[in-house]
Every structure is written in C-alpha cells, then in structure tokens.
Image (cartoon, rainbow, N blue to C red; front, side):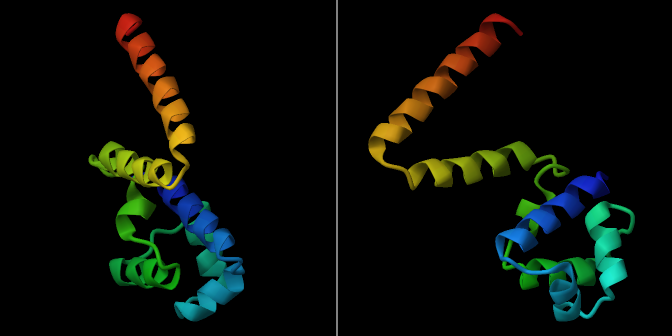
Amino acid sequence: MDLKTIGKRIQIRREELNMTQEKLAEHVDLSANYMSAIERGVKTPRLETFIRIANALNISADLLLMDVLKAGNEIQSSVLSEKIHGLHSSEQQRIYRVVETMIESAIENP
C-alpha cells in the first residue's frame, strides 16, 4: 500500500480546509507527531483512526484511497466528471475535445 500517497491526500484535504496539523490531531484524538507521521506515510493508522480522520476532514474514504484502490480510476473518473459538470457548458466542451484528442492519441500510440 502506498502510505505516502494516502498521507499526502490527507494533508491536501486538511490544507483545503485551512486546518493545521495540530488542530486535526486534536480533533481525532491523536498526537501532532503521530498525525505528522501519518501524513508523511511513515505510520499506518488503524481503521478506526482512519475513519475518524476522514470524518474530521469531511471526505469519503474512497477519495483518500483512490490511488491505491483497484477501482481508483473509476473513482477519479467520477470526481473529474463532477468537477467538469460544475463548469460552464463552453468550458465543458473544450475539456471534452482535449480529452477526446488525448484518447485518440493513446489508441494510435499505445
């Protein structure tokens, strides 16, 4: 399992919420040092700790784990789809054209 990637996702989400590492650690009843070790990928949190972290960050576990789950590409696709859906239709069309071009290129040059 890629603990560094999971830790990085936790850190990114925490920063999106403008939350300090210490505040998150306090919220989930961990030491700041242990929280730091999780974010650096040095320590593996127990399942109940991971759930407390996800809940404190108001993020689903699958988003934190998307790079390590076999269904990760589907999750990423879903996340991108939601982001695209929130854009103006002209921006959506521009993104679709770029993605279609990249897909065609990938098929032609495997």
